[in-house]
Image (cartoon, rainbow, N blue to C red; front, side, top):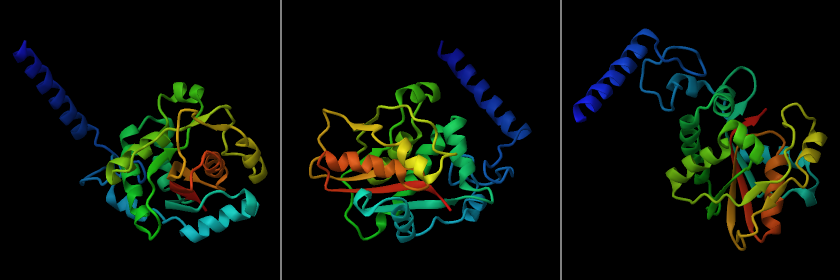
Length: 239
């Protein structure tokens, strides 16, 4: 039996080697063959270096302020790694995570978010992924924000707490106007009744920041639950 397992393992290894030789892996961002050790699964260092950095934390907060009344802005800070917009860049990786099942890439990108926590601000005590509705999670098989949060947790040691639930299955935010985005996420998130976030500093994680409507709605629920501060990070920010 052990000999059969060794033969099967060898066959799998040989098949994988032949696949890579005959059908070389290509970078998700550039489409070029991967001929080097990639910093992220299926993303070359050259393609990653070519991705435009996201706007500064100050610029992202100013963006959120333009879309929310002062009394309705609950986030203390917002940061992102890369800009999302033409030309093609990190959004290709985000699309691959959300719609093509690249879970390992999501975890790896989440670990990269750790560099955003080096700024001189209070370290969060827990990481809160933006939830998706159970129906969408069943359809996709996972929540990409949870995978990002796990990668960030692995890199920092900060625990992940899934204390938010999406109680309304809203339409996608992608094609909505600013006003529609705010209405679309109004009263759709709820705090787990068993969760205790009182006096805690929390960090919301999601894949993309656009106007901040989703993250801000989550922050409002957490603050209503007793959290003392809520910050947010994302892989990409729309520019």
